[in-house]
Image 1: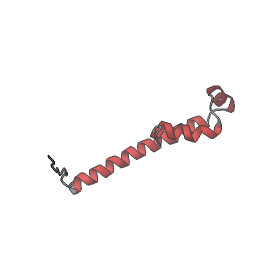
Image 2: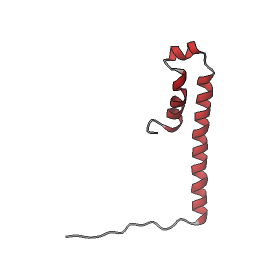
Image 3: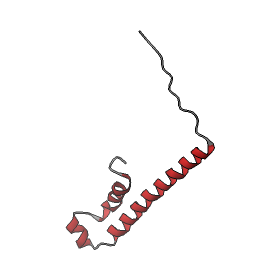
Image 4: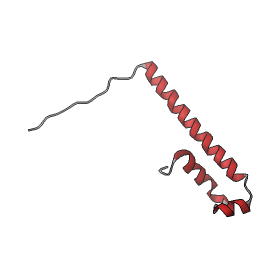
Length: 73
């Protein structure tokens, strides 16, 4: 026995699409702010403080990316 199913969603209205775009923009901006704040805070630490945390200066951007966007990125 075989069957076919067709699942489709109705196209989003213009207002719904615009709202979705705005939501994505807000999420992206919030993640960018986390990235920038993390970079700024870690960059302001002395070499001794970073060494105490086990962080090299070259790792700051990667750590900030992980904080803002998660490990998968």
